[in-house]
Image 1: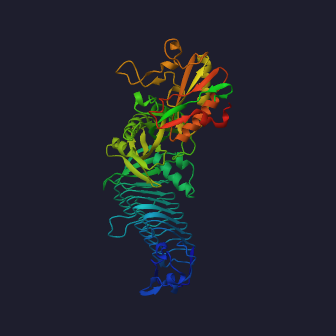
Image 2: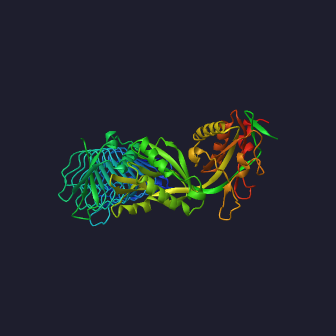
Image 3: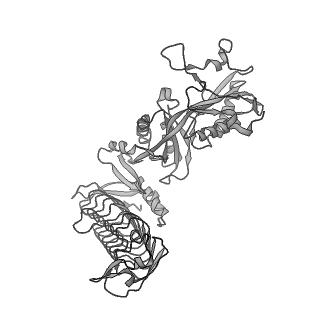
Length: 269
Length: 299
C-alpha cells in the first residue's frame, strides 16, 4: 500500500485527481511525487504536499486531514484508497471500480456520477452524494455508496442505478429526479423527498411528509428489500432485524413526472 | 468375479447414462410449508423426458438463501439446451409465481445463462421493476398478493441423466423397504435428484416394442410375471424388482448417489443389485457398479 502523508495546512483547496490507483500503477516514489496537482490557482506536484512512501502496490492510504483535498480517486477503475481522516469535495466522482474508504467525513459531491465500485464513508457526507452535476443527465449509474453518518441535500439526484445507504439523516430533496436505483436512509429522510422521480426506490424507517404528487398504494413486505438489507449487513452495516421482516407503506410517484418511482416507509405498527 | 455387499450380489454391469442439461432453482417462501408447496408443484409430473419433457426433483433445503427465508432447492433437467428455457418458464410461471409468498432465485453458477425472470417479467404488464443487487438483476412483478421476486438469469450446465440401479428382492415388501432406505440415504447427497415418485420406479422400460407406435415398452426381462414367458434376467427367488433413477449436475454426483444408494439397499431379502443399460450404444456415460462401490464390496 502506498502511503501519502499530507503536509498541507492551508485554506486553499488542493485539486488532486492524481491520487488514483490507476495512476500509481507501476510508478516509483519519485514518479508518484511528480504527478501534477493544482493548489489554489497554481500548478504543482503531489510531492509538494505529500510525503510519498511507496511499496509498489497501487492501493493508497492517506494520512492527515484531507478535507481540502479535492477529487481524490475521481475516475478510478480499480484498487483501494483508504483515507484515515476527512476527504474533500468530489471524492471518487465518476469512479468506475475499486473501493474508497473514508474514516472521517467527505465533502460535497462525493461519488457524484459514480459508475461502479464501492465508497464507504464512516463519517458524514456533504451535498450531492451520488448525484449528477448541474447540467448532467445522469447521476450515479452503478456501484454502491454507504455513509455511516448523515448526508447533505440532493442525495442521489438524477441517479440511474446503484445503491446508496445512509446510516444517519439525509438532507432536503433526497432522490430528486431519480431515474432508477435505490436510496435507503436509516435515519430521518430529509424534507421533500423524491421530487421529479421517474423510477427508483427511496426507503425510510421514520415517518416523513411526502409531496402531494405521491399516492398511497398499500402496506406490504417488499421481497427485494430483504436482499438489499442482507447485502448491506454483509458489508458491516448495522440493521435492526425487524427491518427485514416488517411491513412497509408503499407510495408511488412522483406523478409530476413518470410516476413509476416509489417511497417505502417502514410501518412501525 | 462376483462382488457382494452384506451377501447381496452386485452384478458386474453398468448403468448407461446420458448427457442432459441441468439447472438449479432456489425457491424461498414465508415458511418451509410454502417453499415445499411450490417445490413439490414445480417438480410434479417431471419423472421422465419421454413423457414429461423434463425431469425434476427436490434437491434439499437451503440454509443460506438470498433473502434469508426458508428455501428449497430444485434441480431440473432437459435433454437439449433449447428445451431448458421453455421448461423453466412454464414451471416457474405456473407453479412458483402462482404460489403465495414465494420468491425464485438462480442456484447455479454456470457460463450458460438463460433469461427467465427477464421473460416472466412481462406478466407485470409494464409495471414490473428491475433491481440490481450485488451485480445480480432481479425483477419485481406486481401480483395480487404484493410482489413476486425473481432473478433475471438462471445458469444452465451440461449434466447427466438416467443413472440407475435395479434392486432385485425376494418379495415386494422387502424390495420397497430396501428402496426406501436407499432413497433416504441418497437424498443426503447434493447435486443429484431422483425424479420418480418417492425416488422409485416400478415400470422400468426397454427401448423397443412390438407395437410400431411405441418408443419404449415394459422391461419384460425383469417382470416376475413373465419369468416363464420371456428370456428372463431374474435369478431364482426374485419376485420383485424396483429401479432407482438418478439425474445429476455431473457424473461424480451421480456416481456418489449410486454408491450410497446401493450400500443402503443391501439388506437381507435382497438377492441382487443390477443396472439398466442398452449395451453401451446409446448413453455417453457408463456408471460401473463395481467400480463405483470400490472397496465397499467384497469378492
